[in-house]
Length: 520
Image 1: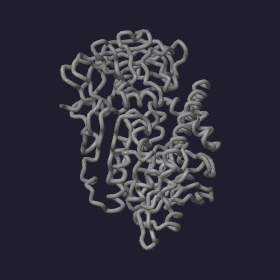
Image 2: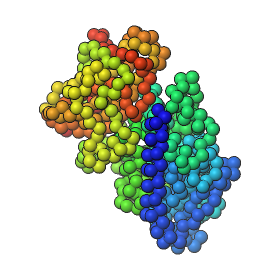
Image 3: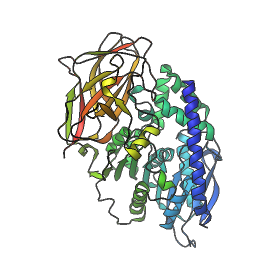
Image 4: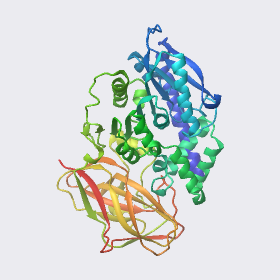
């Protein structure tokens, strides 16, 4: 575990450093060319100094007010992150204020992971903008990528002045993101921890949570869950609905930090004007080109969202189908009236028989590597792969469907139901679904981990598992394979040495996988 943390922290430093160098090189000239940019210090909650910049429309003479957009920075990035987009928004008639969240770079305070001080900071930033810029108090929006997205949603739930939000590659449910299936997403956690350690100052509470996360401290599980819920917009969805801010959510199918399931669940609970956009890629990769001022669909729609809900522009975004997605396997945008309309049929195939596997050995079926795997899927349609016929059956349970005579357009959330009998009270398994071609090469369609604790050894129990939502087209002539094993570098393993797992399909409760499919 220690070596993995060091390796991921080193990689995180490299990723952040490259992003910052590119950001400074790509954004600084635009900032210098725009006299409307000024760098300021803003007193946040408790007087903590937040480093920020303000971009106002060119030629502003103080005679009118403008809608305000506030952009909190992403995890580990400085306040210049959004300058290219801030300039574009200012050119369209907005006052834009971007600020470095507390605990990172030159801002004061400690990292609170979107805790109450961060939410209060957002309100203090709005206060400052209303007092020191020509911002209109009736037209305030917030947006951000990743960490900035999470803070923006939380701020809208706690501050009624926020009238529109664009949350890009963010989270709605923090525990449902990095602790789904009651399993620590250890690579994602280590990456966040590494970036935070290098670019900021973690609070003692955050350091304790990370340490208990790595240690799989069951005694602290409730504390971690409560800590995460306080930092999740899903906890305050009723407040968001009462406050009425229009909410746009955008994410990536392969987001290895904030899987899109939690966005889809949250979206379904919103009753305000809303929009959900999903594209191929990993965490924040669909938005990244826009940060350098390049054409980018996510940022274009963010501007349209604010134009309509803050400036009153009749651009039609409110009349479009609100769920917009691009499949991972290519093609243009598909549009739907709601999440449940993605699939028109749920096709089940049986996980028949009884299969016993041994724990503690990686079978070769894996979810990939944080960032790298989903980026390869995004740019080259090369997801993690496995040679299904050669997977060792001692360590992997394998079931396969019949070959499909027509393409299968998988849309939404694959679910698995099975009966599991472990030899130990705690354990982990990971379920994978592969698209298997004629030569037996499987391309990963989706997966998810599942862990349990406190079970009686030798006693069977039912498992219902939602795999990570996706949009993937299985070609005609291919089949689907379901694989279960016990080790994946993305996740913490809870199986003691020598443990065995038996998957069975009782006659009165048969095991199956249900695949949501869109008809042609």
